[in-house]
Amino acid sequence: MKSNSVSSHEVKPRFENLYFLGLLLSGISFRVIGNIYLGELILAFLAIERIFTIKKLNAPKIWRYLIFAGVIWTFANLIGSVYSAKNWNLILIAVFTPMLTISCLSTCVYFMSQSEDLVFRSVLLFSIGRLIGIVLNPLPYTATYPWKFGYGESCILLFIVISYYLKFVKIQLAGEIVLSAISLVNQARTLAFMVIVSALALITFQKRGRNRTIFLILGICVPVIYWIYLNLGINGSLGSNEISRARLLTATDLGPIAARKEIVFSAKAFLQSPIFGYGFDPVVNPKIIISGYQFWADHGYPIYNYDPTVLPVHSFFWAALIQGGIFAGIFWVLCLVFALGKILRIMEFPPRNRVLVLYCAVAMVDRILFSPFGAYERLYVAIFIGTLISIKYEKPHGKNP
Image (cartoon, rainbow, N blue to C red; front, side, top):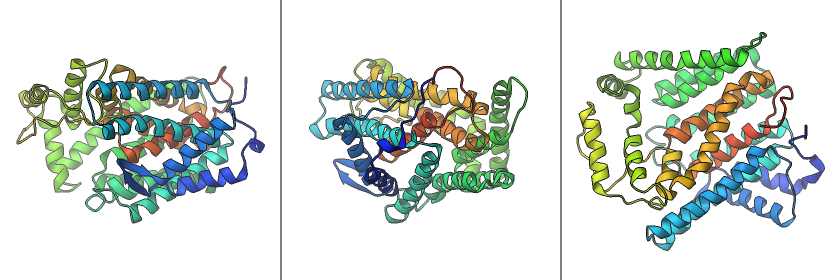
């Protein structure tokens, strides 16, 4: 089986240092048409440098598939935006969004594939860079939700990496539980869930079928964690805001799906223009939006006021389908399948690597299905997918995934 890494002498030291600098600047942004992060520009430059110096990365096939799907995504966004008669600014945003995403991913895979140590150093420096960015360049909601839209995920990743280097095996589970509790108290339900699920990677199985066992445990944990959240929320243990949230989830006919009501609007809009989409900053027929709110009203969701000109979209996958049509969604389908595959085979990774791998995989699944895709997420995609591609299984299993 071919190795999925390149020899270290192929990487020029100054470029490795530049790569690290890019990760440390991952939280500093400026605005040129849209938001761009300094780290993105550095990683994109390194991707271009490799093209011109014809450096080849012997990476798994999934990496090449993702690059190809990224090219399709770029052209789909271009065609969708032109078809929808968008102005030049919106066309440029639509095109450069996938280009920056793929360029940063390419650079991360190139460096992270050098060694396991470089994977964890990359995540470490990226997390520190994001923390620096939150201090110097906070997000719009950081002041209101400092953990959820600020320090939370970076602190979680830092703990996972520090645990790897210092081998805090005995206290790692306790730390994960504490971080999950902190996330829950700070109204970061998704972070709490991802931390708890990633902690399951600390469980070891010696018998055959261990992958099926962990999958079964994951399947059981999801409804259990949801039930615990509902009870804590309704009882007021998580604060006044979560009381109304938990009551809403129990009042509607569709249960937890009500937490992501945007899916209904996205599906209706996509079915009206499945090939070309609507371009960046989509404008759809108001009837689509009105019918979406009517659907939720019919199922017990309280509707107080809404704007029939604004299409709610809250998903990497659906945003791509809405903007560029069905071909723009191929990239995220590949990422989703790839991440799910890592979850199913989590016990085949070395024990010290499992928590990071499982966290990255679960984080990608959540983002692809339920999170809005913006400038802040592009580098997260590069780091998470780069980690999943670069960390090897404990033992050979045929061809690289």
